[in-house]
Length: 319
Image (tube, rainbow, N blue to C red; front, side):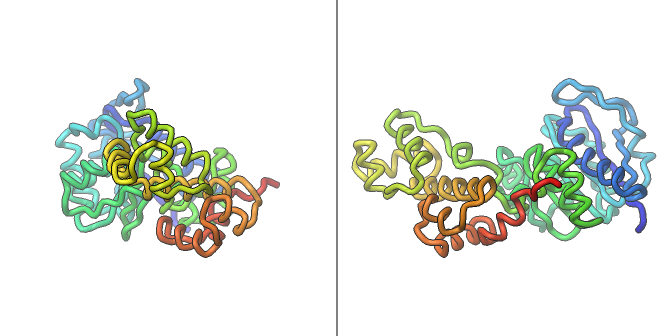
């Protein structure tokens, strides 16, 4: 098996975990299977860079001197907000030459600025998906998944999702057993499916300003199997259904039905990940009523059935 050179691009204001998270995954795979990866880091001029957290990273070399990599990995961070034009020019020239192009978090903004995501599906940190779509209309932005593969280009969502993407690439390059060994060493799951949502229902929606609506949000979260119709929730908030639906959407950014769907999906996901409960039992506990209703919800939102989700996400017991 030929050795793959991995080049991590460094710049001032980079998010340290965007670099070190995937780097630790590939380094772990190299330790497990020597000769698999050659890992290099480079900045524009080869000098040290300061991360957004204040750490100093010392690269191996300058980008101009770096060998052509098999995988070019571009992290995100505050430094992507107003990037050095020289970095964009370098990516525009060298990015198309890499057999595999990867970004973590807002590193997608740099790839997009260099024209490397035009005509492709991509994702980034949920807080910057709107900006990516607005500034680069030629990019098909997918705000939900934790990572997206489109041909030889792979983009991941915020920060730690770079670890999930790196594990997926190790599994692709080597095999599942190596990726599982690395995941166990790092004490992370192998592996969150790429189409898993970036964030929970509570993070996706804004917290309502008015106390009755906040109480309804809490009630939904604590009673996913309860009567969560608009009429029932409106009565709990002491509002008419029409007034309640309008106010809920204005204050949370999503309709009551959408919020309920997210809470139920999240609840069912946690039960699949953390318990040995049967599919039928989880469907009832999640408010779906039947396994078929839950299956349709999972396929629509995550592109996979509950049983497959459990197999892919729930870690096998350590031996």
